[in-house]
Length: 194
Image 1: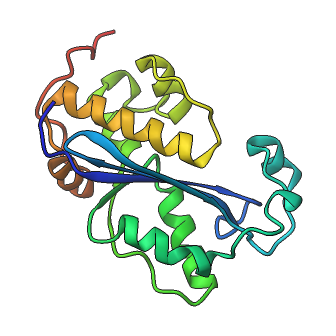
Image 2: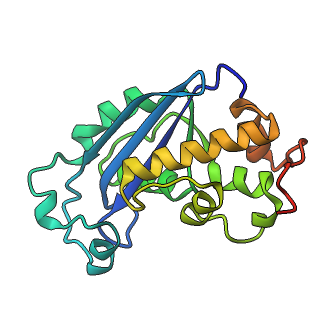
């Protein structure tokens, strides 16, 4: 694995179908290809939870009753994420932060977003069109985690990104450039025919 792989990965859970209703944030930070920080917080979104979302992640109104509101946790989030490449599996999390920051009158996060699902689609050709959801790709790669826990999801997405880097030899910086402009991976995956 290339040394010097430094990045963060974030995941959020939401209380409703409105992606601004963040109720949990999980962040992992990697330096030199190793996890150096794991952080998570429950967030009180200030809205009633939808039963579908509760069934998905197990977080409910009473779980977050005494949790901080988003503006209270944003300084911790910014300190861990800003001025670096930040991965998230699909851009749902990016959109959630954008919507939640806007809702609370806060500036958006100043990060370079990297969609780890786009990395998956370019690394393993059998997932180019479908099957690149986090639970599916982690099963394929043998990564076990507790799905729909923000910290667990962030760590799993980071492991997927590291495996893609290992598989292709493409650095996190180069993945950021390639996914931002739609370039294919130059290295062919050794497992692309599996």
